[in-house]
Length: 194
Image 1 (tube, rainbow, N blue to C red):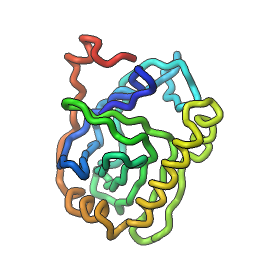
Image 2 (image 1 turned 60 degrees about the vertical axis):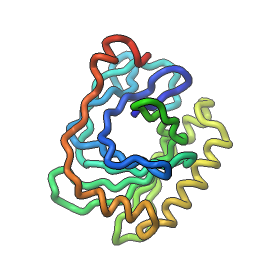
Image 3 (image 1 turned 45 degrees about the vertical axis):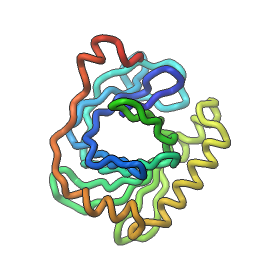
């Protein structure tokens, strides 16, 4: 899965497709996955308020994440499961641009705002509002994009845990898959521009 800003790759995240259909694509990001993240000149991860970045390897740590991505929707709904099997899982709604599907690829852009919902709390906890504001101030996110994203995120949260995404996530979250890998041949050939 590629996250792109304009014609540049913001991150390249290898995923395992658990199911794919016209209404939804369900992917897994497994703990231990090596991916390419946007970094600054000293190798620190950066956010959408910067305009200068390169790509560097990073490791997905902590939780296995199963995401439901729907065409036209400004968010993905996820279930985070501790990779070591210890502790409770939680729902996660990631604000992002609607997916663009290509041959063997999915493109989007994480728009910084996230929400978590524990199965017992029944109340969302919003994350990274400051990063969203910084991205908006930098002109990386428009007011219309922010509005569309928040509308879709609220709708996704209201439908959890019993709606269609919750059902898909409950069904597929227990599926165990190893970390996916980046297509190093494509990276070395310069297919993904940093």
